[in-house]
Amino acid sequence: MADNLGPLVLLTGVLRGGAAADFARAVREDDPALYARAYAALLEKDMQRGFAEYLAREVLYDDNLFARRAYAGRADGDVCAAFLHDLAVLQALTERADDLPPRIAEAVGAGLPRIGRGQAPFGETWASEQTVRALAQFYRANGYGMFIDNKAFTYEQGQLVPVCNAPDITLDQLKDYEAEKRIVEDNVINFVRGLPYSNMLLYGDKGTGKSSTVHAMLNKYAPAGLRAAELTKDKVGEINEIKGVLAALPYKFLLFIDDLSLEERDEKVTALKAGLEGSMHEKSSNVMIVATSNRRHILKENFSDRENSVHARDTMEEQLSLSDRFGLTVCFSSTGKKEYLSIVRQLAADAKIALPDEELCALAERWALVKGGRSPRRARQFVDYLSACQAKGSEILI
Image 1 (tube, rainbow, N blue to C red):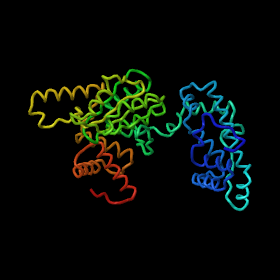
Image 2 (image 1 turned 135 degrees about the horizontal axis):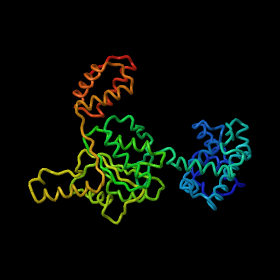
Image 3 (image 1 turned 90 degrees about the vertical axis):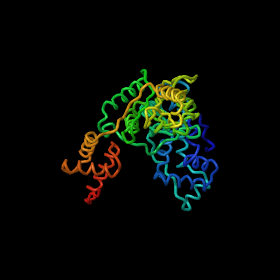
Image 4 (image 1 turned 45 degrees about the vertical axis):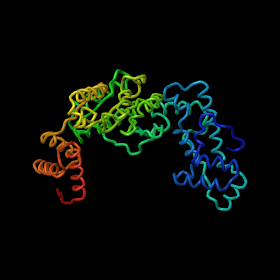
């Protein structure tokens, strides 16, 4: 930073990279090249004339102790004082946009584009009690750091990585299966409210909406602090490791394992059983394990296993032992013709498909025949196709 600016205490991440870091180094070292790089980075964000606004946004989305404490409602005393200090330091940095060191000023005078200071949403004085209160309210309502704009995450190399294109599906878009959705939602409500809850296994035929129901629950209850972390099947052995990471965070997490199936002798079976119950790793109050599977019994049974009656009995006991540890199992059964057409009609009504019911149902049945079966997924794909045809005014070819 510039020589007349003090060090940061909590907001060190703001100057760890990007335009802010380049600008800070540029004015400290009087380096026109770094200044130009900072300008280029700001130009990509259309903020080359608003450095103060850019820096304020970096503050807003920084993961720091004040933000974490504010989200938990515990930001006070020395934490607030340190945060006020850092706000003053960063505001002073924005003022250097109007007070350039000699070599950079000379380069700007010779034609190098100038970074404009602009106005920040924090007002004339960043380090004020009013600003701190406003930011504390923001963090309390929206979360902090990467959790502000992200609900879903993957677990990679010991860290949570945001999922930028998480499904935005809602419960209203999932037709029928009302009893199943109600059971799942009731358990999620218990979890979010800090009441006793159960880990969940959603099982049934493919395309029946198991995963979509989980995504819809996340979208509905994210404002209440719900987040999701997906653990891929090949990483089930790391389940207690990620539970430890999540337990340290002040959010409620659905630890989501999609399309789960394991071989009987797979070492991940032991890890999953331990993660659910029955090990030194206690059930965490902020982590619910939610798995989807095409079968009630997650363990695959080989045909050769059936030939040995003793082994078959052991296999069945192992299957039940694993499945029963979820606490709550919900079956999403396959759809018959009546259920399938009910879903098609509802989706078509939402999409404002202008077809007589008889023609709609006939096309839906033909679609199911061509695509190999009836399911909520097939129904949605069919209606999406009709919507595209209707929008283009093109012929329906099934």
